Length: 261
Ligand SMILES: NC(=O)c1ccc[n+]([C@@H]2O[C@H](COP(=O)([O-])OP(=O)(O)OC[C@H]3O[C@@H](n4cnc5c(N)ncnc54)[C@H](OP(=O)(O)O)[C@@H]3O)[C@@H](O)[C@H]2O)c1
Image (cartoon, rainbow, N blue to C red; front, side, top):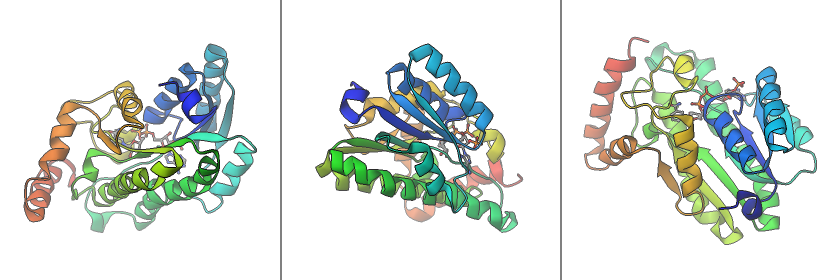
């Protein structure tokens, strides 16, 4: 698929300073798309921007913004200016592990802002222009933990279920405007995520290249994709038991892995 022809010249990637977001930026650049690189760490974004401009002769905009603040949309509007964003990747996010009662409320609330509120605010803003142009693509980052409530990762799994639902429902709603929507659900993928969430990437970690390739193969074809066979089996298995059994099993596994963190 020629992304530029199908969706337009500019992509906006949130969380482009590392991990999956950085890989989306690299892949888009290799396909000749111009990119708005968004995250908090400006130095990282500037370094990536210089590299991509040099390698691929594309245009970039560095947008150093904290998505947990109340003013982020205004700051992003200033960065984007008159550019038409054809692909929006709602990728920025983080997690936490441990007992909910011991967690910092401030931290959990910030997670909901970055993982859930920011994607709906950004989508609501950029979809208007996509609708007018009758083309566009929006990607939401779910996770394999979006498919079953996950104790000791409670808030995080709820934020990812939110993204899974947003992506799936908007896939249907926006079809009539020729806008492709995808909820992309990675399992353990080697990035900075694990250090920040005090988790690990599991027995069969995937690479960011795997995840982005899966996303772009699926975009425009299906509402949801889980990256990797092992992760697909995990996410499907939660459909077969009762809710009580599913949460029970995920609780036992998560207790072993995350309760002490
Ligand atoms: N890695 C996994 O195993 C895995 C599995 C399933 C789903 N996911 C999802 O994949 C997405 C990307 O995560 P990753 O694995 O690539 O982790 P990562 O390497 O830690 O990247 C997270 C990105 O989000 C940005 N970010 C965090 N807080 C932000 C804020 N307040 N404002 C703006 N940007 C912010 C970070 O940039 P700055 O720090 O520079 O702001 C960074 O670029 C997340 O939504 C995550 O939930 C990851």
